[in-house]
Image (cartoon, rainbow, N blue to C red):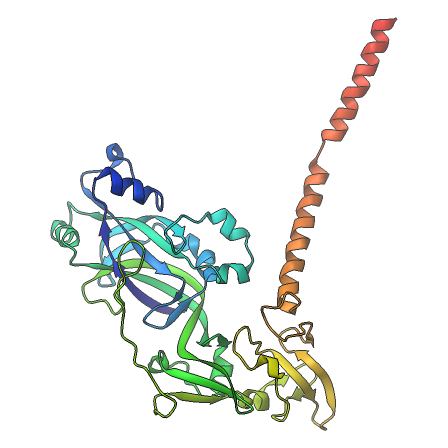
Length: 368
């Protein structure tokens, strides 16, 4: 697993009633009579959905999945595991306005819905200030920032609205293991037409938060909501400049082989014209597949599900997309199973029938 560090400002919680009330709307803080005098309490934005200035991209669904890995992790100095000065004791999800998001509701939502939700994770932590008084004083003076630590199992490469797995990205000519490509402006062309444009980012998958450090020289500006973000100037590129990476999507069509039909896609077959923009574009859609003899074996094919594409627009945002259909089918099956289980355990009718029978018997006995 790869490891990643992000930075954000620490914001101490003053004892004013107004600030305490505001903080309590986002993350639970200890009451005054519950605070221990040898501990310094703080809160900060831990991580946010979307792309940060290190060009790591966090999907809402991945943040929700990793929610259980945040609390009870160590707080260290400059990411040194031998210098533990505190720990994280609470976390809270909130929207871009700073309003709390309910975890139960988030967990019940579909992946596509979560990935469209802007969210931030705030943390509450403590520093052992009696053991580390100098650091506690410097934190209070605003000389330190927090730096999120996490592992991730895999990643996708994102260019504009187009996401590619590392193999496809490398087939297009990107050395995905090279961090120097992150943040570079790239354009993806298919049959001479631009289908995606944007800075290259890494979409982290299988995230496990591993702790939090305090640092003095962060590589990332402060996070938003609890603190003000410092904007980083991004160089503007033009088409003529060498810094723009031009990628030919047709290379994938030449290299991608369907294991089911043992076929490749020829470069002559273009995606429909209505898909010339990059919004929702589906990298799994193939207009035609050919076998080794050049015979067409399938048309309008979805390589992700090895089945005919069911979306008229060949768009991953289409409700008829196989991916979206499978999500809905899974939800229906899960709901039906739950209803069946509850029905099997429901004894109310049986108990009511027994009560009615007992009442009838009691009436008969009384009338004798």
